[in-house]
Image (cartoon, one colour):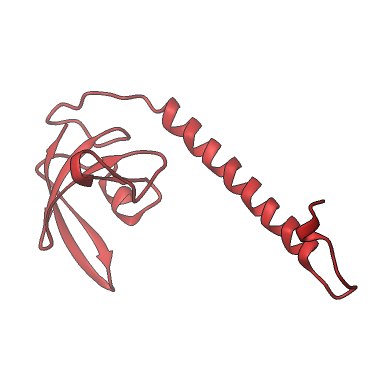
Length: 126
């Protein structure tokens, strides 16, 4: 036990707080390792124009908010990749990811945002 976490009185909770923090950090490491393994085991594939969207698809979307490129991945949702963060990672756990899986280029999906349905066009799949 380090000197900083040693209790100075019977009411001092530093050592308990330190153990909670250490456990939380250990759990975060376990989660990150599981996510890393899911990404490493993801099969990358080239999508044809008429293929249904699946993990590893790079998808260009257009909505009333503009155009965005997303990468469907099993983990890392919300991360931005590419030059200037031009590609956003979307997972199957997100509403957008769930809507996109199985959809096709040229089609549209609806996603609820801020209590309203938003129609999103699937412009291109790579």
